[in-house]
Image (cartoon, rainbow, N blue to C red):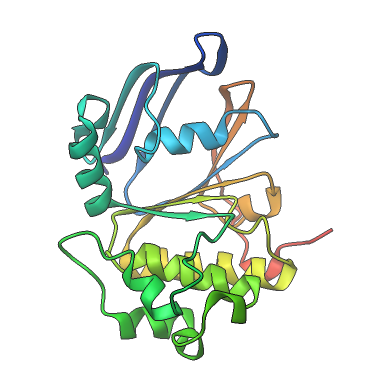
Length: 231
């Protein structure tokens, strides 16, 4: 099995002083569901942003699908992200003056795309297509944001605290949907979270602290999203 993402000795500093990542090395295989966990300030979101091309490292290299994305210029990186990368965030980032369907189509940036009807079916969002974001619940808005990320048929889906603003029921629904998406489309999913219950659903758990990976293990006891315990 080949690596889809390979991170080599990544260091990230802000203002030449604050060091957020301290020489991180990690490889991620294709068609896997990986969670990155750790306390606030551990560097997990920064690592994910560098993997997905949203941020550049101070030093080090990142290979995605065989390409060194740290060497790409801004236009090349934008094109690469448009073709390969989907993002889902804690904040839904929907355009409030657009309907659900129009928001989804905003994500169609690559040369390939999935059929809208297929996405509507798997996410169960047919009743949301003609609604505006202010007419949707938080869970419904997150489904639309996932659909927007999926429409361009990305190789990789990066989720940054994608359930952070949701209640227990909607959080479980989103995690279950992501596992179904991974199986159906063979996507690689990288999910950043502070919630260790979500990590139990994934195939691999990477734990970060103080800008370093302190544990990296295969999850041999995966649970279903319905089995997650909520405080």
